[in-house]
Image (tube, rainbow, N blue to C red):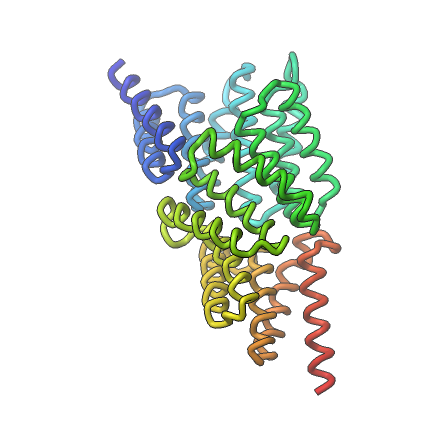
Length: 359
């Protein structure tokens, strides 16, 4: 019984630190709980702890160990006669594992996992479970990343309706959907439509978690990108610097959110004519993305394109051409043929080639 109480204590502390945004401390406690349960616990209890551990590792950017942890949890959750509770645990593990694979750029694998989980969730008795809304949201995010915007929007709106029907006007899941709808409108270039969603998401996350939580910081950074596109550069820069301070405190120097924030700060510096600072920030963003995501992840392409434009302005057309070529090679086959980032990279590369031909 003492061991059981110790496990509960560790899990309570892990949840407390996770809710406060201190993912590293939360992971330490989750690992302690997992170690004790490995020595003597039920398969379902251990799978639940592995779900928490895998999610924390994903937040911290440790995608390989996150996937291994969640795979182990899935194997345990599939043991024995499935109860409704066990099935819900399995669905949450599949959703988290799909998010890991999407973060790693494997959109096809993420989609397969999510479609299988959605089919399982739809077979559960009773009203639509909350796990279904989460799975549909994850599939929509996957569609958005791969450039299937219409399918993503359809799913986001379905999730929004499910959450509103469940009377969750202040729930963090609702914040996530507004964040995603704002991101989708931003990706489409509809910045005016994106802003209300981004502001709603930020208000919900700050109210629930506090302004210094990394989830609220991510909402702040997303709003900043939209405001920058709307021409409100000073407000955007202030929000980005606030977000960067939170990300650095929580994650250290190497994390995807830091890379994205540096990319967006670079864009503001570039517009001001601060080319040296913009180049430094773009190269920092690219280096972090390469270290945390790998050299051929689609998320590298926007920064490669931005750095290429900058190098053109600085007169280095050879490096600019190489950067465009690398971005296009990364995106082709990984995203939809009409993905806007791929289209932009191709157009910029073609313009550079025309300029070089006219010298």
